[in-house]
Amino acid sequence: MTQRKPMKFKYFYQQFSTHISIIIVAFLLLSLLFAHYLENLVYENKSDELISYGRAILSDIKESPLASDQIIDQYSNVLAARKMSFSMFDRDGNLYLVNNHGPAIKNLPRSKWEKVTKGQTIVVQSDYKSFDQDGVTFVVLPYLDHGKFYGGILLTSPISGSVKMIQQINEILLYTILIAFGVSFLQSWYLSRIHVLRIQRLRDAASQVSKGNYNVHVHSSNYDEIGELANDFNHMVDKINASMLEIESLENRRRQFMADVSHEMRTPLTTISGVIEGLKNNMIPEEDKERGINLVSQEAKRLIRLVNENLDYEKIRSNQIRLFKEEIQLTEVLEIIQEQLSLQADEKNDQIIVEASSDLYVFADYDRLVQILINITKNSIQFTSDGIIWLRGKSEKNHIIIEIEDTGIGIDSGEVENIWRRFYKADLSRTSNPYGEFGLGLSIVKQLVQLHNGEINVFSEKGKGTKFVLRFPCQLDSN
Image (cartoon, rainbow, N blue to C red; front, side, top):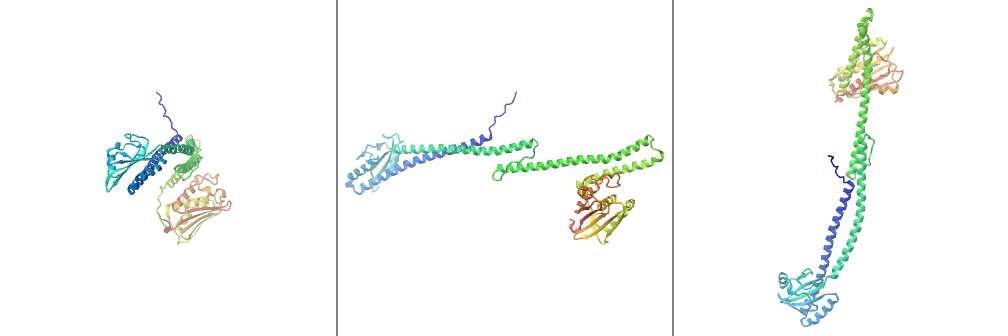
């Protein structure tokens, strides 16, 4: 049984219907409140007008009782011109001096009649069905003399004119609402469309990212949440791009590492395998067997150094190396390096010269410092024949400077920065070097110097030699 997909309600229609529904409800509430207020205002004005006429009539009659008939005739003419009428009633509610026939005052509810007898003015609209006349607004004003009720006056006015005016105002209000609703409809459609398009752009960009295209960018702003979301999206894509570049770089380095290790291990393994096969099958003459065994031993040691250098390099990169720093007399260390490498230097007819003051001390890990200096010095011996190698030490501000300079073949300016790369060899013809032969030596050197919070720089010119400059901070600055 297939499952039915839920019906989609697009975000555009959600936005649009929300805006329109809010506008409709707001218009309906405002129009109802306005119509109700307007109707009450019209009736209130009519009632106030009737009350003012009634009070004027009672006041004039009270001041001139002998001229009451004349006063009544005058007001009767004035009110008739305004389509109003009035009648007098006694304390029992009986009408007299009737100008026009009005509603029977006796039909007034008892509660309201009691209010009239107590001196209160009553306003009655046409919705009281107990009266003889409908469609009128009338007021009842009591006549009191020294607190005693003697009757009062009843004034009436037809509400047809008021109703007509209210209908005209409502009609104008309806047209206004329709026009405003039309404008709001277009505006809501336009605004909803803008928001949907902005979200659609984000959706399309996200779809591109999901397909592996990370070179996308959406317009962003800071004036609303959608703009901030676009900012976050662009930031996310930039981070993904950076991560992908880093992953690609790491993958290339991994491939290069595997290729380099395979290349470096192939030669000694091939040599070892060939010698062993020769010994096994008695293909090597007796006088050459010792030489073959020595070759196997040398190649095995070469493989061990390759493994050790890789392990050392990875330990340094993963911060697994702990340094035990101490004050070391620089002259003593340089002389040790000179003595240890003197045989190798003699083989190349090189001369190692130490130039350093005996009062110079470097704050470093002894074993790692020796490793650094041996690596660089052996590198200088390798590329120098019939030349000189200087091991210098000097002080400069808060640093100890160590220089290792040779008169060898030098390095091409385009390759100087590449010597720090893992497995890089400036001279690809090198095949047998007792130390650093795998292109790991200088890479390890740089990592160890940086662990000492130091700096290492190289200056070289093809055919004119190479100089390595190491700067180690003094003890006060090493922390």
